[in-house]
Image 1: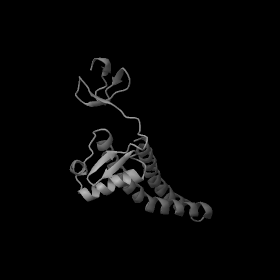
Image 2 (image 1 turned 120 degrees about the vertical axis):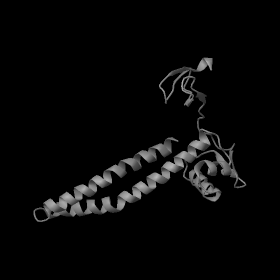
Image 3 (image 1 turned 120 degrees about the horizontal axis):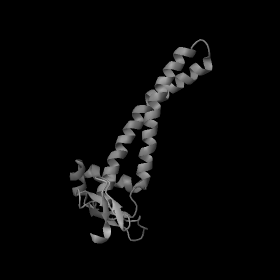
Length: 165
């Protein structure tokens, strides 16, 4: 999950910077067209990167975001059936299977095998990522990650004593 979160952060950063470069490029061209040709050329380069790069970055960001949701369904909610995953994500089974394969091949989902193109199964020959446990918050009812003897609910902020659950 860390890998996909890091990738999303990088894409978000570039998704914000490229439109800024686009606007800065327009200013550079307007202000330095006759006075400073190298800065005008830099402005043209900024415009090109901003104009063509922004849609590519945001399209990739959206795809990664949907992949993160699929990854959460597998790792956090323990859904291993391709049919159930496709129902949860609102995609066709073939598309969901292709997305799961992409997660495995991209290194986002490690330690799993696809069985009969219908189910995911833990691969016993691959070292698994550290598993996380979840508890139901007694105050708001949300699923919360267990971190030692006490956890903080990420939804309501309550302190949960895991020893008594």
